[in-house]
Length: 307
Image (cartoon, rainbow, N blue to C red; front, top):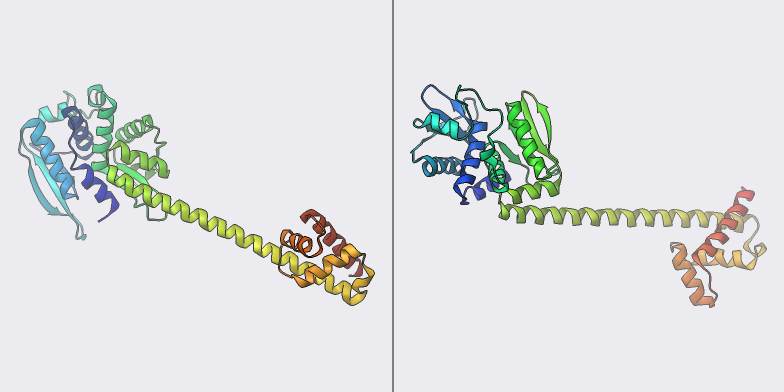
């Protein structure tokens, strides 16, 4: 089962007030409605979504809709549930702000549909049941989207999402308008808005795990890069020391440079910090990392002159 189906199944089991039911049903019908001569057809590939829409019509209008399962009109093996409404059509379309008195599509639902914050959340819940899709957080990218043929509904849904600071955007894909959200935290907030709290727990657990894993990988990469840099520096210092030893001998160096050369040869892979601590422990003479680095710069200058 996809994560989208899991989220839709969860919110289909929730109960809300009548005004929230109207807002949810309005969003679903406005973005899903197919008007026929004497009926309305709605569709969903999710059985629980189809059942919820059926129960919402029964609860709000006291009507028994017809639900049937059909194969999609292509070579796909997928099936779709069709909900057919044959009574109270004008009342429903008017109530849910689908058509006005002149049978024209209403671009934006009337204020009473989204009168409160809870009604707005319910509208977004209905929008998700009808047109929403969300990537499983285990996948490589976070993504939530809603697809529409109608530009007005697309803009309205984007505006509604952004009232909750979702930072949603619109793109055109083929012949459809897509409202989408890419930010992981915003997607998690959206799941809270539509009351999909079990999905929020799953989403956050995966997101936190991925962030911790990424942080660990970044730290490991930094540590590896530092180790590589230390080894490269040590090798360059050893090459300088070998050249000086071969061409002129270490005894010609002053005592401090000679000491640095001998300890580098003795501890060829230690960092400057570690080497300075070792020198202090073995000679009881303090030398800082920067002081030791200064000695190796002088050794490098001598080696460069020899070269």
